[in-house]
Image (cartoon, rainbow, N blue to C red; front, side, top):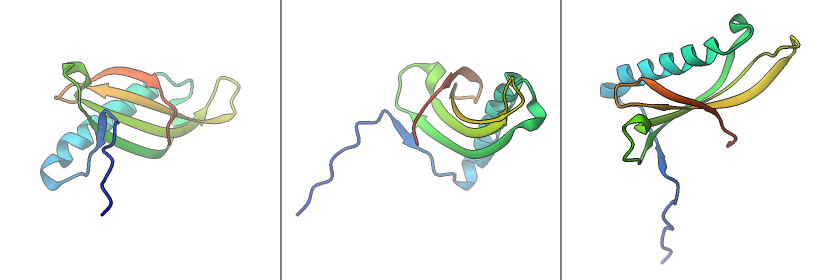
Length: 103
C-alpha cells in the first residue's frame, strides 16, 4: 500500500463553491485593480491565468493569496508576460503585491 506524502506547501488552492463565489470575485477584482494601477498601459492588460489560495498563516494580512499571469505592454511598448502574486486580508483587501515565479 502506498502512502501519500503530505504537501509541505503553506498554501492550499481554493475550489470555488457557490457560497464563496462573491468573495472570490471581490478578491479577483481587487487584485486586478491593484495590478492595473501599476501598469504603464492598463488598457493593454490581458489575463492569462488566475489562481487563488488559502494561506495557512497566522498573519491576518496574509489570509488569502492569489496569482495572476498576464500580458501587458511594458515601458518600451512591447508585450511582456509575467506573474504577480497578492496577499489579502480575510475581507479581501490587497495587503501586498509581489513578483512570483511558479507554474
